[in-house]
Amino acid sequence: PMVRRLKYESRRMAEVEAIEDNDALLTGEQEAGRTLARFTKGDAANEKCWDRSASGDGYISVVDIHNHAHPFEGPNVPFANYFDWMEEHGIVFTVFMGLGQRIVKSNEGDPNCCYYLHCPTDNYTVTPSDMSDRLNADWYTTEYKNSTNGYEDKIKIFLSSTFPDLQNPQNNTVDLDALEADYPGAFSWVGEINLVKHALAANGFFNSPTVKESDFEAGKPLNDFFTQIVNKGWPVTIHADIGCDNFLAVPGWEGKCVVEDSTGAAADYEWWKEFLGIHYAAFFDEATNTPLENFRKIQYVKLFDSLLSAFPDLKVTWAHMGLSKELLRLHPVVHNVILKNLFDAHPNLYADISWDIIAQLYLMNYAGMGIEELKDEAHEDIISVSEVTFNSTYIEDLRDVLFEGWLEHDQHVDEFGSTEKIDGPTYSMAAYFDLIHDYSDRFLTGTDFVSSLGTPEDWPGLAEFKSPATGCMKNKANHARQLTDTSSINMLLDDDAFRKIVLGENFFRMTGTSDMYQAPTICKSPEEEGPGGDGSSKKSDGSSPFHVAMTFGMAFAFASLFQWWN
Figure (cartoon, rainbow, N blue to C red):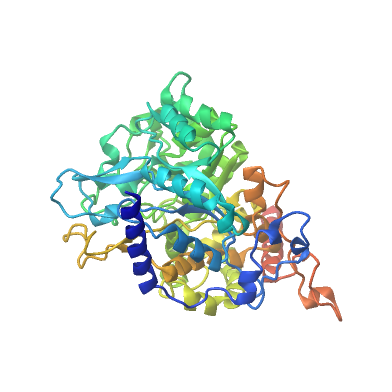
């Protein structure tokens, strides 16, 4: 078996090398500046400030908290190649996930499928499995921890277990104990695990009962499982859709995005009224306290809150901020309220801004979104009660300020990112701007990259859903693109938020490694230094386009308040 595996690895490495793209995402100087030493307390390299300019250290994330080293099915990119990609692209810290489900065919003779949307039928069910966790752990224990390879000196990896099944949790604790027994000390994280994931609807996700609030009660298997994680002190990444408003990306499920439990929502209307505040009337009939049709967009918020409330010491990363392709028209003001209220209630909750779709469909696709569709008269989620609800003038002006920050790096995004999809900050991004900065200690960066190497010949999927077949082939350029897309948001942050979110301060705090690692300070510009200053080693005071945006926001807010008061 070992000989066969070595031959297989050799063939896969040859395939990867044949499709490698040699364009460099980072300059040699930028790559050389992204080392563990640069983030290690007491190291001389940590004293060098971070130059955010395009010609300096740049905007690309150094932490990838959401990194799948295996696909749903088919071969992954060989670990040696994938590690090189991460190193060359400047990743210094990463949560190394498997993909805790496999695609199981009902009929052995059907075509192989490496991605569920290439075969969205009940004949290809997405089923939890620890296979990729074990493959990751094999590499981690034999190669990554082998000092002769030098891997540990280059990238700090946190190995995550992704197999736990929240819908059928009876064996989670026993199976996790067994995994740990086989790989002692290897794992330090759990997830991405699915609380609710609408994208898997056509592949059997809703064939099993969805998780209920009562499942978190003492004595239930889910309570045992999450208590086990709390006792270990591990963080967990949870995919928890806020709700849904479409199934356009899930073939065959059009029109099936419905309110799953309208009776339960009506019974809990007082909770929803307090949680939503002035937005309650947009989602509930105030006369009957029954949910309206658009309540489907937020229907799982209370379930997620119940999980967080049941385990207050659980360190949770909310994958993708709860967004998905199946939720395209939730108003950002309402999403802000959801995030704010959950952050306020749950000090151990974080949110990752991973997945290129977040940038492509929500935050950085300016050409694809206008301000008019967000105004209260055009949006079902907003009932105008005052300018505070959605101040479109403020959002338009703020978006113009953020655009100036985009212009410094837009050529780099054009070269390495999704040029046709990423073209500058949206009005939605402007709507999220204040919240991200008010809660800048709660956000984390990630790619949601899936390392896969399934050829179209071997992994075609079903022709009626994917023709011509593409398989799941990834190369270095794919990784650079997804990292660029997800990093594009970084350029809009002020210096303090950038240091916390992008340079890892939040990640170090969450992982309990702040005694070992710290983010470098942010360089001052020559203008901030004054005549003769070189900006080489002093922290910025925030006098940048991003600081201008913050100052502008505060001034606008005070002006609006003064106008209202009078």
